Amino acid sequence: MKIGFEIHEQLSSKQKLYCNCPTNYRDVSPNTNVCPVCTGMPGSKPAPPNEKAIDSAIEIALMLNCEIVMQEPIYIQRKHYDYPDLPSGYQRTSLPIAKDGDLEGVGIREVHIEEDPGKYDPVQGKVDFNRSGIPLVEIVTDPDLFSSEEARSFLRSLIRTLEYTSKVRPEPSTLRADTNISLEGGKRVEIKNINSVKGAYRALKYEVMRQSRTEKVERETRAFLESQMITVPMRSKEMAEDYRYIPDPDLLPIMITEEKVGKVREQMHEAPHMRKKRVIEEYGIEDSVAEVLVSEREFIDLFEKVSKEIDPVFASHWFKDTFRKVLNYEDIGPEEVPFADEKLIKLLKLVESEKITPEKGELILREMVKNPKDPKVLLEDLELQELTEEELMSAIEKTINENKEAVEDFKNGKEEALNFLAGQVMQTTEGKADPREVMSILKDRFNE
Ligand SMILES: [Zn+2]
Image 1: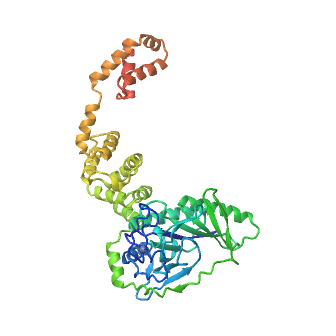
Image 2: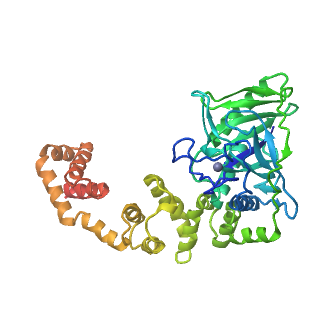
Image 3: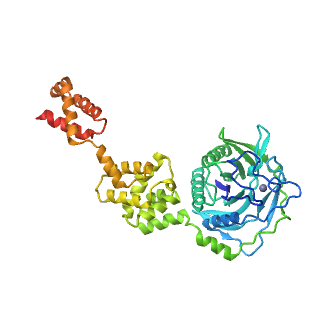
């Protein structure tokens, strides 16, 4: 089995690719971010391509270890097809701006820049052109994946790499992927309309099953129906679309200079797979821990800052177990934590030096996420809420006095009566007592 991908993601840019219309299409009413260029009016002339979008695509290509096409004209082509979301009748797509990269052993064949078409709603028959002309990066891989599982994990890794650049739009569901799959001896089948990693996995799983049960697999393009988790025929080889590519006569070709690539390289982030390798070597942390740490750029950024003052191995486990858990629980990303790095370091120092238990450390962190006070102040607050020895003993006395029957039962050998009594103490103390401590005090009392 051989699987490859073609992935499209929107580049984060305030302006569209060939005009100055804004790109915040989700926040505005339909057809308000439009002009004659992005709606393809006859006679309208595109502006030269958005430099920022080109820089972003170069950075993405560099992160994917590609060779940038330099000092030669990169033509912008018109790809013709007819669909209501494309009023001009063609989509502008660049020749490769980069080639021959790889990500975790999977070949990255080409990287292109494209413009997004509009959004067509076939049910209502309406089109919204706010999206037309938003810059896209297209990434084409070699068919180097050999199972649906491998494909899924590669796609996750690719998305993480793109997120690391912060050059793709952060909103979810901007991913659009096509995948191609051929089983041994069979023909290549292309699947379109995939919008998520899970969707890609389901589509491939379905296709493996379908192709292995089909006697003669034809070369064709199929569409994935997410609602039913199946693929259906779109067009066969005979009906293959002829896009009649021609260079766009309204646009000069893109020229990427060595100087420009140098500038992008200078300010770009380290790719996550490279960073994982480095932190393992530099800090001596475990592979599986490093994998969690590099899951988000801001998370590993924080870890590296903290590691200057805290033992990195200790901090790595704490980040992976406690910090990750609290972030997930509060449903926030590491870039959203409201406290300064120094407070996190202070808290970790308390845990590392065993001045507080890891459990207490976690309670303080939970509070810090909502209420970014100094951890020492939060610790004092926490201790104020704790049960004093006196309060605990009085709750135990009260329980014994009010439950004479249960006390007798226990003395007569009914072990479960002790659980009942401990439960009563927990209720009286509103759950603040430590149940193990309560059990042991009660036992001592009755054995006297
Ligand atoms: Zn426009």
